[in-house]
Length: 302
Image (spheres, rainbow, N blue to C red):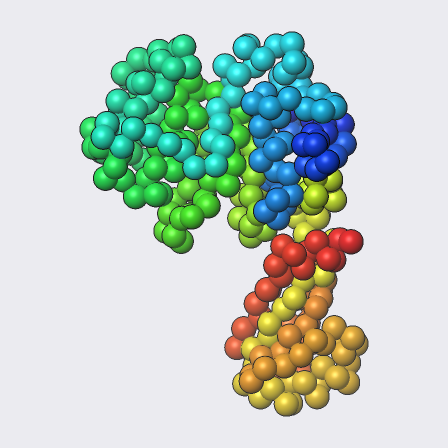
């Protein structure tokens, strides 16, 4: 598929008095991407998103959406963009359907009842369309927030930490919804998160930023293969396994042991070779689990 840019961030910077929140940031999101925007809390992700949405003005640089500058074509651009920035807020005493009616009017583009029902069906809330929002779980409110972002059928959907504060079931629901929006409805998704595993599951391309600056950008699998990750190897006989590791090339990857677990640091694409080596040396393996955190991945990059 031809890579057609839908969002281009060019040399974007934002300074609040003496604090440089975003520093000369550039990246490109192509049509059809699920693009992961990754960084720890405080990295400058939300500030960047607010500049993309023209909620705050950059100190330097520009944002181009659909080939046009946000500075000169904001009104026409925003009609094709849907977004959730942090936790969505609703009128708790009103129904989900009524909230969407009011919110669409506030955006000066009233939509039909059929469109509202269709959008609620997309996010799995059609059966609760007439329920008051104050009876919703946090996961349901997040889904209603995504419905709000979808109500005008945008081409680009920007989601800022959409699974933040959700339990595992709620996180799974949101992930499945994002996949469906991209695959079934051909939506381009810009997904901001501080959770590496979430981006790994959902995104095909990503950027990692820290302290407002780009660390790396590109294909998700290629980026994740580029650095070492921590492994927990659980075995039946830890002493025997450790003796075999210490007499091999994997000795340099050894970090520590705890009970029947051996901790190593290894390139991701070397994990199958390690597993094969241990099996060939009669090590009874219970599990091999990657345990790399986002912070550890940053360290491997820098």
